Length: 416
Image (cartoon, rainbow, N blue to C red; front, side, top):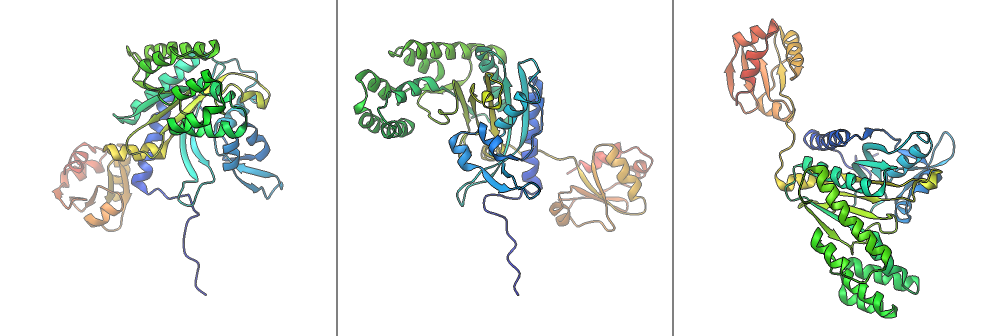
């Protein structure tokens, strides 16, 4: 009988050493930024009881959840499609007595149903800020997002802000669900003709605002100025003025005169989940946003502790793709050395103590084998052989390393 082919499930993949190193460096880099801003790292389980997890998921996220029967209990559990509901559960239960604001950060994989060519396992790193006043919390979130983007080293990364209230005001005026859906789709596509057709059943003043939403995107200050000149109701105008003040506060937090950001008030991504500010970040080479988030003041109440909250997550795979497109070099690991010969164990131990990677081999690998194994050089006899094929005499340096002085040997190992 022929054995079945060796394969992975659809939507998951392996990351070999170089790709894995880039993603780990991305995760640790942004987590270091988060911790520098006072966010404490936590770890949450990859699956939870489905009905508990799904309290915190929107309709689309619930549809994306991968469920299965947990063999030990027979309960229906779900792989987490999002980490934010888990943090809401933790804050509302295990941290219920902790005085806010509460700042938490995380990194890990989320799992979502996807098409045959789509990724089901997505690597994320993110922050959640619970219990801070909206004005200061939103400014802090934008500032942390800006700092995280700077850490990624993407010179063309663009932070894009939005707010749900203008769109919600327009869509609330739709006479039925069909008109609302057609209007939302047209606004999202920035399809002016489609908006005008869908808005025929709206009052003239609402139809005018719907038409304007198509153009309300661009540089932050100029876009807000155009938006504030429109005849919004008082609540929407107040939200837009608050967003303008948030931009100023966020710029001060990062030490800038003006925040380099755009605004898109016609972006409908997540508008049914978020309750105020939205933010996203885009970079060349990434197929979609590398960062998404916003304010979600209704979520914690579903777990028994109403509180305002805001947060974002970075898609580490999208960020890795953007880095490659931008020519950002992958992280360079510590030198890796194959050590052979009579005193290989002692030399390898000394090299590890000096921060290098060292493996003891029976025979010195050839240069091609060194490259395949992710090593930089081999020590054979009294010679250093590099992965490029160069050979360097090193008898005295090797003898010094045996005695614990690795400096001369490391200098030779670093030679091309």
